[in-house]
Length: 89
Image (cartoon, rainbow, N blue to C red):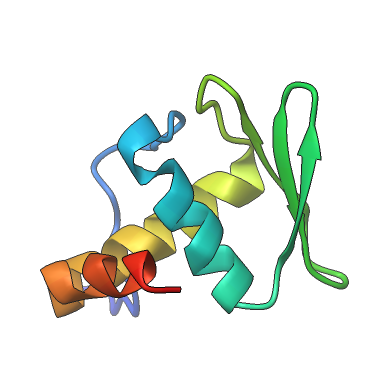
């Protein structure tokens, strides 16, 4: 049996639900990303990390998909309070 440090997702989330758009932005700004609006969506930038891009329709690039999975894992581990605290930032 192989040892895993993070659980595998059964799906690769490519589309950010609009009801989580603001929470995703706050989650990443809290982690040190800077947001920059574009005509097509938003880019989140942090030093030498990959740029997170989310279109106005919620389509995420690979880097944003990985951060979204981290946000979901936090929710799965901590429950609703993890999402509720993103409302107060």
